[in-house]
Length: 79
Image (tube, rainbow, N blue to C red; front, side, top):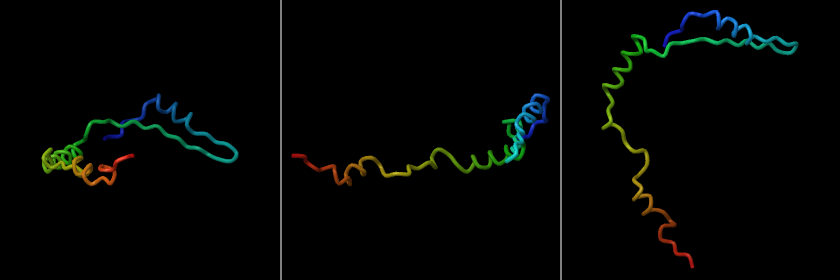
C-alpha cells in the first residue's frame, strides 16, 4: 500500500474532524492509501505463495465420523 497525496476534499474533512472542548481535544485525520501492491509487497506475496499450496491445507478438527463415535450422547436412549 502507498499513502496518496492529500486532496483539498480531505483537508476540509480533516479540519472538521478536529474538535476542541473545555475538557478534551480530539484530533481526527483521514488519509487515503492505494490498494495496489508496491514492489516489496509483490515480492513477499510471490515468495509466500511459492511455499504454500492447496495441498498444504489441513483440517483443524477431526473428521465428523470420529466426533459422532466418541460423543457420550451418541448411544443414549431416552425412555
